[in-house]
Image 1 (cartoon, one colour):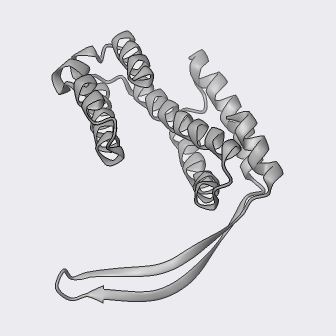
Image 2 (image 1 turned 135 degrees about the vertical axis):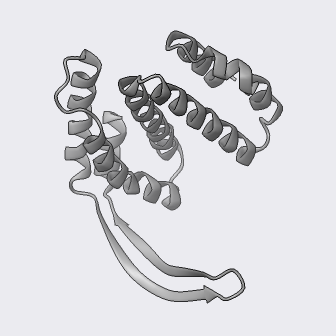
Length: 174
């Protein structure tokens, strides 16, 4: 609920309060506190509608900052959780963010007169440096096809190589 309160304040500050009101997001969020899947869906809907609104109103920089902020917040929550509990699946998810980080760096304006981008890019560059030593090895698995649905699934595994020190440094930077 504290998180949603903060989201509401930020939404109001950037002109997105109508989306918060139209979707009834605060009520829906509070009503589904015990249902993780519903909360994820509610937040995903809020993000999609906010992103659409910002792009329709040509607020591309705010949309980019919103995306970056959401990603950083999610990574922060994950790294903080990893400090409390040694969870191999969470560790892998944190390591896999190397790809998302590289994609985000390509998306954000490199040259910008806006102080927000200048500082954000500096901080993300430090994170890129920390992730540089994190490696992932893909191994191919069995491919299965479901004839009824006409879908093919390529199974495989990703092995993450991230030391405790790398994880600690990434967490500190985030």
